Length: 328
Image (cartoon, rainbow, N blue to C red):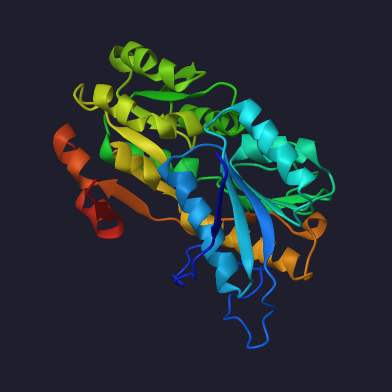
C-alpha cells in the first residue's frame, strides 16, 4: 500500500549519538525554495525500533528546512514487496532513497548503483556487502549502524542474573545482522566460561515452538537486534516470563514487548543521523561514496522494572544508581 506524507517539523532532542561529519540541524532560511522534492523511504517491517528510526529520519530532514515529501512504503517483511518497492523508486528517479533495516537496504542497493541510498538499522554495512569499507563506502550507499555493545549487554545480564551458567539466544538464521551479533555473543560467553545455547528461526511462526524448546536448557536469554524477534517479542515473553526466564535485548523497543533489560541502541537518534546524512546529499554537500558509516557512541543501561518484579530479579543498588528504570 502506498502512503505519501509530508514529514512534520522536528522537535530537537538531545542526541546520545556522535554526529561528526553530518550537517547541522537548523531552521529553514527565509528564501527557502517552495518547490518540494520527493524521496523514497522503505521500511522492512513495522516494529517499535524501525518505527522510531523512520520517525527520526523524517524529523531530521524537516529540521534542516528542506521541502521534502516522503514516499513511505512498508514491505511487511516480504521480499517480493521489497523488490517491487525498490524498482518503483528507481523508476520514479527519486534523487535519494532511505532504507530501514539490512534486507531493505540490500534489495534497494541491488536495484540501483546510481541513486544515493542512506540506510539505517544495519549492523555492519561492510559485512552486509553494502559498502567496500565502513570508513569509506565507495558505493552509492551510506548510513547509520545499529551495532550494539554486546559485551556490555552480557555484563548487564550477569549483574541481573549472577547465577546464570547457560545463556540462550534466538534469532533469524537468514539475517546477516543477527548472525554477526551471535558471533560476538559467542565470543563473550566463551570468555566467561559459560555455555551458549543457540537456536534459530526463519519466521515469526517459528518463535513460539522454538522458545518452548529452550526453556529447560537456559537460565537467561539474549536476543540481538533481529527483525523477526523484535516483531515477536510479545509471543516470546509470554512463554519465557511465566517460566522465570528473563530476556536481555539488543534495544529498548524490545523491552516494550516484555524484555528485562538492555544496554541498547536508540533508533530514533540513529534515524536522525541518517536523516541528516540524506539532507547533506540533497543539498549537494556530500556524496555517499565518501560518507563514513556512523555509529552510536554512548549507551545507557535500561531495566524494565515491571518485568524484573515478575521474575523476582533483584536489581543491585550499584546498577540501579546508573541505569534507567522503565516500566513497560
